Structures are given as structure tokens and as C-alpha cells.
Amino acid sequence: EAQVTQNPRYLITVTGKKLTVTCSQNMNHEYMSWYRQDPGLGLRQIYYSMNVEVTDKGDVPEGYKVSRKEKRNFPLILESPSPNQTSLYFCASSLMKGPTQYFGPGTRLTVL
Amino acid sequence: RKEVEQDPGPFNVPEGATVAFNCTYSNSASQSFFWYRQDCRKEPKLLMSVYSSGNEDGRFTAQLNRASQYISLLIRDSKLSDSATYLCVVTHSGAGSYQLTFGKGTKLSVIP
Image 1 (cartoon, rainbow over the protein chains, first blue to last red):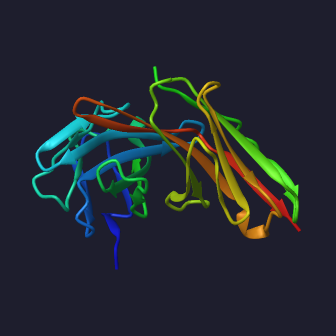
Image 2: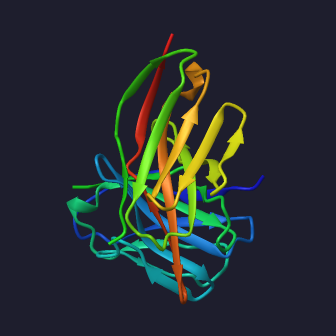
């Protein structure tokens, strides 16, 4: 089954404790991206990757890192999480400039 | 600055009604346009692409007006299952970049 998986689905952590949210897709997509969704602010792109070893900042990259060592994986790293990073995070993938972004099920992160 | 604006609603309509949403975008260089649907606490899913000539998919019709920089979505004969948030999406690309900007969404509730 074609899908994007994210782990964990739910996470409660404390300020400053490094964490990684994994994202994996099995559709051989070149393009992958991370979004955060907050009430009243909608979906905002954090980082995106157009291919292996190619990553670029989206609209709200501060406080996040990503890597794209393999085509299928695109982890999101929070080196020192802060409460303002409490949000719902979505990973997505697509063919390069393809019409359909396939979203993962989301990761709900709470930073205390 | 890239902006995509939508009326947040909610639009509360009876079953069988016709409802229309508009979305405006600020970047005249935007290239591709889509409507996504998001159910509560779920990931967004592509509803339809939007083409300059207008396009229809069953009860859904999408239109693009590049001169006025807006896109629209018309839903005819609304069903209870149409209740969701509808997200307008615009893409921009340049040398080595490709980004998607989402509107904040318009909430639709179809009432029995």
C-alpha cells in the first residue's frame, strides 16, 4: 500500500530535550516536506527536499533541522524544543512538481 | 510575500445546497493551484487540481482567474459527507526551489 508513515504519532516532551520525528514514504517520490499546523495559522511549510541530499527552508524553518540521506526518509529534528513548537506536524511526499501531495497521518507534539 | 487568503467560515448549509468558496493569492508568479480537503484531526487530501479553463469532477467545479488572482470551488447538491475544511493551495518554483503555500482553510458544515 502506497503510504507516508510518521512516528511517533503523539509525543509529550520537555523544553530542551532533543527529539526526532521520522517520516518515510514507499512511493519513490523525489519531493518531501514537513509542515506544521496551528489553529488560526493553517499549514505552514517548515522544510522541503527536492531529492537526496537536497534540502531547503520553507516559511518557518527556525528551530528545526532536516536531513535527506535516503530517498524514502525525511526526518525532522528539534535540537532544543520549546513550547512554541507545540503543534500538529505533517510530513508529505510527491513526485517532483506532481499535483498530489501525499500526507502522513500527523504527529501531535506537546512541549512542556 | 506569498499569501493565500480564504474566508475561514464556517459555512453552514443544508443538504442539497450549492456552496462556493473563493481563495485569493498575492504572488502573480504562482504556477499551480489545488483544492485539498481536510477532515477534523486528519491529514489533508487532494480534492482537485485547478486549471485555467476550469474543471469539473462530479459535483465539484474549480475555476481559476489569473488576472484577478483568485480560485474558486463550487460544490453542488451538498452531502453530509462534504463537511470538512477546504484548503486552497498555490505553488511557486524557481531555480532550485519548489514551495507550496496553503490557505488557512474554509470550514464547511452540511446540515441535515
